[in-house]
Length: 183
Image 1 (cartoon, rainbow, N blue to C red):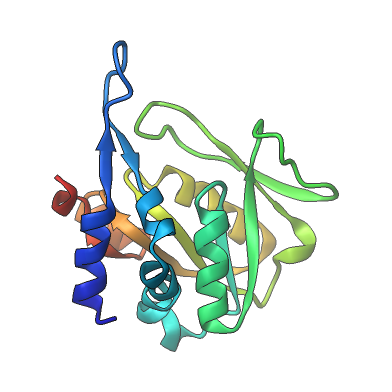
Image 2 (cartoon, rainbow, N blue to C red; image 1 turned 90 degrees about the vertical axis):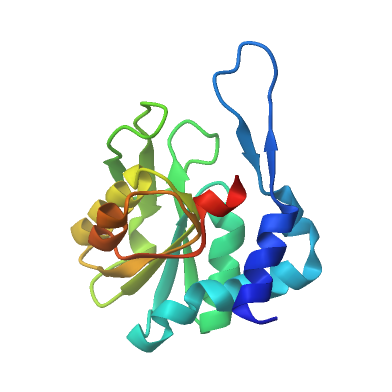
């Protein structure tokens, strides 16, 4: 599927959900992307395309939706995948782990992310993958983990970019969609 067609399909399958009384904002629903087999088949190759020439050796992605997108991207590159765990989500890694805390995200939360030491180290050329980049908070934590482990971050590929252009440039973020297209 051509990139423009994939972008159109992503927009069609996306929904904003009103969680009801007491909520201060709408919630993004990207589950339509996972249900469409053509979109699912194209996401990995589309996400890695801007970074393929940089020759990543590993894909790193944060829980939760990154645990789906990361393997799709890694498979498209023919490299391994490393998950980043969030403290308090019940899936803490066993063994030595490098942790970093994000700056405040769009809700003012600080998220602690951790990566198993044995899966990331010097010589790794890392492509970070996520579904949505709004503040870059989690990316800052992931980039810090990579630096601590001696790995080189090539940049981030996201389905939706919803951050200011200066931040996208600083963090080397490439996206398939600008959030403005989602209404």
